[in-house]
Image 1: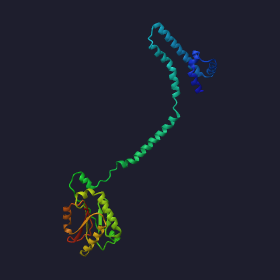
Image 2: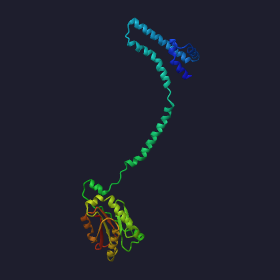
Image 3: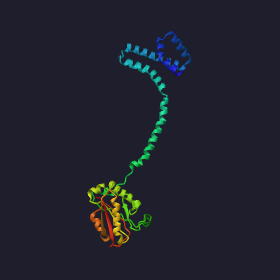
Image 4: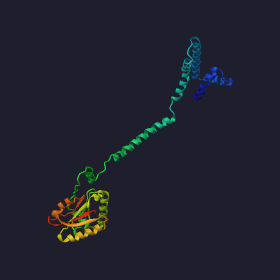
Length: 282
């Protein structure tokens, strides 16, 4: 019925102007007999046409400007078109009704996704201490890390025959027994990795960049421990230098060399005992 009424509204002017065919006029009369809305709209159209006729007569009588007359006529006649369009568009389309909840769900999903990845975007990644020092243009200072004796590690790696021999990488916090066959390849890997990732710039600026201290449990094992260290480091691709120095002079010697990284391996020997100092770098 609504579609038929819209079609009837379009032909209402033809009906009033009597330009409609006789058969079409009969069908329209039948529709008007059954549709009260169309009868009311037809009455409005007749009223507007009467207003138009009155405006035309007023123009002839009072001499209104031609530009004013069409505006007044369109203001009167346009009400019918506006009413019809408003009635037709007042109902939202099914597509819009369906898209509204979908848009809300998509917005919520996007918000949740951003909320999940926000901590990773704002996370402050750790900066190597040496790089931070360079950023503030401060003089290089050795980073000292002293490891207490770990007898559990010594027993696990069967290191009692050579004394304490541990490597400490400050940025990793790793403590590994060097004088163990199964751990030698891992130590070589960690040493090379450390130089490549964290101390490459330091290697270019310093002759030697990593200090490793070894000392035996007895003076008789100094030579054996030094040879053992040399055989392990030869398997690595990084240059190294081995020195035997008294423990009383080790701190002064390290400060004068200004190492970038410092690893200490000790078993609390006497102050006058021999220590094996290994520089790893170029």
